[in-house]
Length: 391
Image (tube, rainbow, N blue to C red; front, top):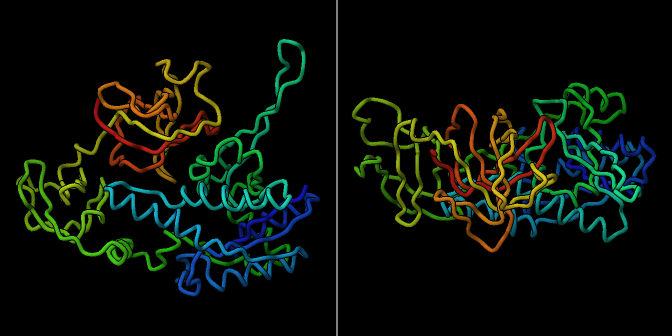
């Protein structure tokens, strides 16, 4: 196959490209330039997409003996990932830019361009597995179509199936994750060293790549401006001030700047962000616990049941609400629209989902987060949280 290897300049993507070459594919490396000021996008292990990263990717491609190109996707990145990040915070929601990057950049812009250029697949350094399930014969005896499933990586610390769930089955059919069989990052680094790749000991990047200094609140303030407002408790009493409600997220405890402690002396958390009045509402921890979650824009690899969406049937599954959060047991049902607390379903039939927790409630679930549904290690589907409440 002709394979386009996405090379970020890190050890994971370099080894993924090497394994694609070793498997006999015709591989071309490409580095995505996502920042208009790339020299400012790395501070130690923070950020990515710097000139240094592009150079590291080129050196890895030279060692592997494959062609290498840099594609400027900075405008698309700004218009989708960064714009979504800002608009979601401005709307009082909690976005996940890594999910949006995989959706709009790696498995939309990059994959679509690769397909247009005649490549059969895109290989990345994500930690996830693709399992191909053989198709059963149809009622007429003819062979069906094999199904590709997205599964967790055996490297549980680095598993990235959560942020990949948004890609859906059509794009999964054209994706390769060569690191799917590695159980640890140490194994990947050893592979890089054995192959003479200079990035074998390069530190991992972390945090939001376009907020290289880690100051998310400062980034939001620079882009959205100062918008002073009030912090109130759940009884409506003013207990502090803020410089912009957009900088707060449900479940937040630190940096609230409260003028006086709660009457009972207990810690307070953000329980609501009311953008219409520019008000941040704080309350006790128990107000963060939810056992019902609704989501919109659902993407299914495999529906949890055979019946059509909107039938009302519930199915057992597991839910992960954060990139490295622990999965929790739930019951899930697919909906033909976005479910509401009163049981109604709104929208124009765009797929949604509804979840009810089995056992201990979750804390701090915020609108805008990605809710990913699993059956064991298999990803069933994903949706963006619209609401969470106690049933």
